[in-house]
Length: 341
Image (cartoon, rainbow, N blue to C red; front, side):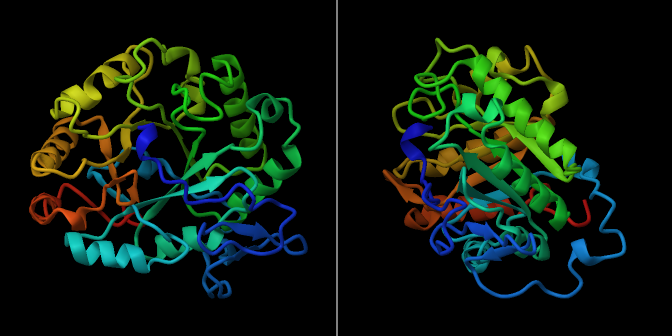
């Protein structure tokens, strides 16, 4: 939902910059070696997957596409460049997230260290890639290929699974790549060009998540024209929040969007960004979220947006809701080590 998004990267972290932005967690590609110099500091540890004897074999993401258990995800400030915020979230909720979401601006280098940090703790990384200062038409036309090819090569070099969610909420008017600024045809062309560039680089270690906003506030925008096709998408992500202005059943928040999506694809669904507005109803919202995700076999899990942005979505501000969240998170159905799916 557009009122809830925290932009944790800065578009100014471009290829021309040599200084790293520590708050964004973005990294700049080393021109000489192709390695990623992370804003978190530190070198590459011994035994990295990309240095193994199997480095030339792309990581097989197939077991992660629809695992038996649900993803228990979180978006927390500073992660995964640092995993300390995730560790704190784990202590708070009683369960370690196995999916960590962060936001990167187009022009940022690939944060290989952050992805590795999460992986070393049994978590997959979901990167929301946001093209603030470039048009979708330019991306589709190949005008950004120098950057794009370098990025794809860096992802392939690391050779760990990563989820990429490009230009999400494209059906909203509030994004610079949304309905006011780009057509569905331009969006699909840009998505396919990016996907094809990664394929050409051999970066099949990417899980591609196509992620609209829930249609509740924008019912007049059809989703199907924005869909690149099953050959270009692995997961369907959905962004949606429980707010006090609407009915709080899971079906009310997500049902209309899921119903529309299922008319043109059967790809598995991830609730890619969600939270509940603070207040007396928050505990019930949490209960509805867990129940809705658990009851639908085609829903992979969810990512809780644990930020303070326009509203305080952090669990810690609502002790009763946090207690309920912790109780429900203890269910073995939620969370698993992504290294052993």
